Image 1 (cartoon, rainbow, N blue to C red):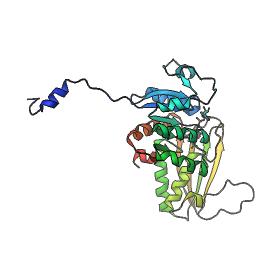
Image 2 (image 1 turned 90 degrees about the vertical axis):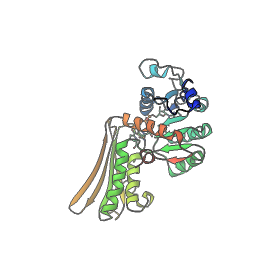
Image 3 (image 1 turned 90 degrees about the horizontal axis):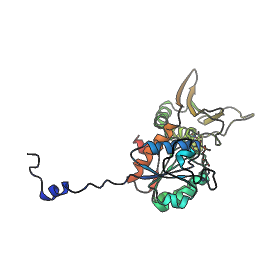
Image 4 (image 1 turned 180 degrees about the vertical axis):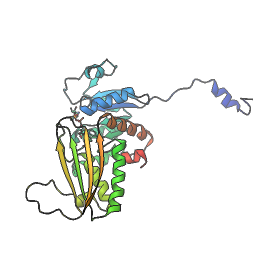
Length: 288
Ligand SMILES: NC(=O)c1ccc[n+]([C@@H]2O[C@H](COP(=O)([O-])OP(=O)(O)OC[C@H]3O[C@@H](n4cnc5c(N)ncnc54)[C@H](O)[C@@H]3O)[C@@H](O)[C@H]2O)c1
Ligand SMILES: O=C(O)C1=N[C@H](C(=O)O)CCC1
């Protein structure tokens, strides 16, 4: 009964060896960094992709070492390289949590390789973001100031709450990070600020208050303020505060493990494999 109705060609096909599609090859750039090491581990632990290169800045002491050994573990058979051109030419996806100018250089190579470029780097200026655009005409770029599921849900909530509460409620975003963080406000804080501004039908560029210091005067109605705390080993904490006369609503995200960012980046890289050129964010990946 089982083979009834099976066409001869299909029958013959059953005996053919099945050739599995190769897993997407992933390059991690900035592989020696805090996030770089997390990303290398996430790729090595995944059975949906393979690590083709661990890329570091030119002349880094890890060059030529096995990346597993360089990170203090067992060898994994992938050498560390500073040859970005040949590493990225072999990639279907690049995970990039580095620095703005480094990510811009990587975007050009990713575009040439038609590889998905997942950018977690923060601290871009508006001018630098504009320079990413040409690369997105050739390959997908998925960029977010925070790759975690929780923060992307928080952004969606922030948009809704800002829309519901209106301008009688002041919006302030307070973030805390480790002492080594070089940019402020955090990319996440800016993402949440953008979501709040969108909820009000505006853009953050119009509503953002510069960092306060000295005789600032009273708060401008409808503005969105930011405050940054830096210290110790804080992975990342964000409060979106809605304050009005007599009450406050606080939406909070606490990150306690950088693995959440690496998992989100890897998910984005795999999601992007069948997408056309363009600029995407993690809300696109999650469909929220
Ligand atoms: N989007 C997110 O979810 C998320 C999460 C965590 C961190 N970040 C961002 O990721 C970035 C890196 O954070 P980190 O804590 O890992 O920093 P880090 O300083 O530990 O690592 C940065 C790495 O980038 C490398 N690098 C810098 N310039 C380079 C170049 N020209 N070529 C190759 N490598 C280069 C450095 O050598 C270093 O290894 C920051 O912008 C941070 O804000 C984003
Ligand atoms: O450690 C960092 O640096 C982080 N950067 C991102 C940001 O700027 O929001 C995400 C959280 C951690």
